[in-house]
Image (cartoon, rainbow, N blue to C red; front, side, top):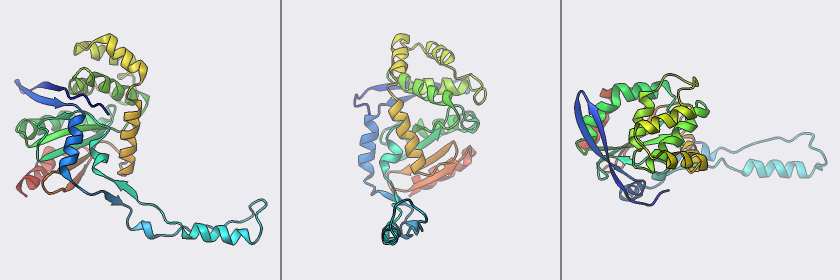
Length: 269
């Protein structure tokens, strides 16, 4: 995780109006995580008490006495529950977009090649930014779940390399604005370089970052976080209240009204 604290401004346009939001480096996520003071969540509590009973037949040189012993040992083992902590949501993602002290954090697990992630970006995300992020009520983190293809991984890595130059969210938007399907080449290495030129990145630094694969481990860790949460498709959202410690999930490209209802409910409590 990066520890350098660099503040950047992210500017975008909605219906002809210009908006600027602060972009915070990953160090903010650590601060945010500390303020929540939420104990680790446990998934699989119901199944944690289920014993594994496996009967072993015809195994090589095992004696008759050793077979029952192995069966007994296996039967006594329990399935370990998957541990979910606030780090599962806040670590291994993008810089925080918006007010670091916002009452609500919206975490999106997405794939840049995903059709419904693109639908959310064009139909819903700008409304959330205008109504809740710009007003300081909600901040946003994007986390990778690269499940579609190799171009998904390349696009995610390129976005993190853009983050080194304080332009993660600009590159994020550029990727979705150029989306044209799944595994059809729009997120090729050549196009990713062209997108970097469009937002005026230092191209030499950008190229070297990608050659070094500096963020491969971070992306793998984010994928692992998604798997721990049991996510089976993208986009998947987690709405986290720092006041009530409540976490609510939203699956798929739901309409703006779904997000609005949950945001308002958390803000009222």
